[in-house]
Length: 98
Ligand code: SF4
Image 1 (cartoon, rainbow, N blue to C red):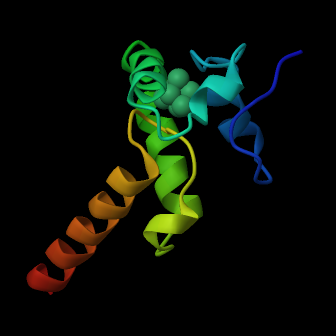
Image 2 (image 1 turned 60 degrees about the vertical axis):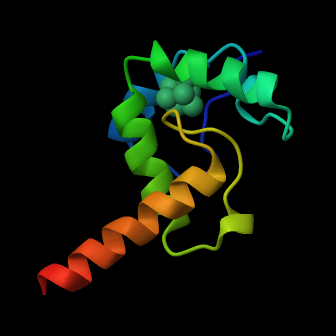
């Protein structure tokens, strides 16, 4: 059975990138436990994914300002804690530029 990442409502354009996801046949691999090997397996899939940029952008959009504990799975090659750091670095840069 094919499962598409993420679970939020989609537009037709978003679904297009999901259909080309490298993880389309193994979505469970993208939600590793804290095991380092499982995380590396997930990241390896992302590294060869043609839609990694769109995936990461979607994760950042959906997660917004959520805390570290509210970000699940590997999206666009980044774990939840890594996306949390990315969000805060970007927010800090935006504030500094304002
Ligand atoms: S970047 Fe990773 S999580 Fe995102 S669609 Fe591709 S393989 Fe899946």
